[in-house]
Image (cartoon, rainbow, N blue to C red; front, side, top):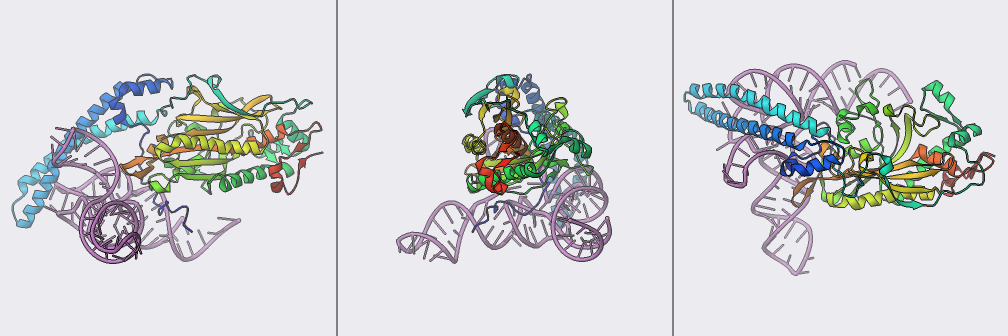
Length: 441
RNA sequence: GGAUGGGUGGCCGAGCGGUUGAAGGCAGCGGUCUUGAAAACCGCCAGGGGGCAACCCCUCGUGGGUUCGAAUCCCACCCCAUCCGCCA
């Protein structure tokens, strides 16, 4: 049987250069289109200054290259002359002078290039035309819904009320161990958490064609840059004392498995999944979701990542969100699909669908999955390409939660809670729960 | 942590100061042959930047340095492998 990972060549990391998402040539070709695209992200006009700086850069580079060409010619002549026993002193003198002239041009071209890159690498992706305008989540558009909120016939409790009453969810002990935004689960709830993860992985690997992966939870700068968390979003991440980063999502290591690679077109699509812990500083979330396990520094998530040819990413995006929805449907949850508006779409994404699950205890729709088509944004940054008939081109990358395990646990508790405080376990999880059908009572 | 040995094109692997951007092999693509396929044989085949083009420039882990000239010499860093120590 052919290895599914035959595309992966022997390990040779850190050969990639930092490169920003945006193609300066495209900006040069149509500056106003670029400004219009960035305007949708709430950014002002940038193209004019960029194009001007790029013109300077190319002028310096062109001048430098002329000198380099002359230097190369001289070096060749000197080499030939020496072998023939001729006097090459005059040529060597010219070459020495040339080198001095080149230094300034080299510095100038390098500085301009660094400046341009610093600007470009901090800019967000161009949005898909279908993404609605808007500055925040109120402008998101619900595009589909499965099931409907219903009256349980009693006053529903929130997940932490249920969990604490069962004696199986313990925030006090977690705070003692680690501080706020952590949880300790016991017994059946701990097992339910595990069951959810196992079920999701099995579903995606057996029925959706994803390859299960085990990947590092600690990664280097280049990896975090590749998926776009660096340089702008370092505050959201935890950093280790030896300079690595704790992954905020398996998207980071999974997507970067193709960093620096030139993939055969026949190797695509590549569909990868992993169940990992995710670590987030939640720096900007002070005061939000402080109760319960909605927003934790550490949670588990099954992640879906697809690496595809450029013309296949739109369809892959629909397929991926369908895979995430299959999880929620199997867990008998009520949910809806939302397309995020311009202001709510993450920097790396061209288009994002969120899946929001209905939480009866909280009486609210809450995000449980987010599926993004990043197009070539990440691929450019990490140098992930494919060999196409016309040459190499950047692949497209997509990622989506399939789904967040902690939030799935919350949703199961709140959705399937009973009047007596017990919780019915969805049928698909029974095998994973050793036949247990109910928690509590 | 200690000691060695390494990082060269899609892959393997030569090169160790001067037409070497890089021999050779494999893979891939095109062709000859064949009823067809395989084999054999012939040809093509790194990536990136600039230029209308001819063509030019850059890239042999990364960044510096030496030199008229660096894949080749020097320094620093990163990564990998093996052995020893420690350890889930």
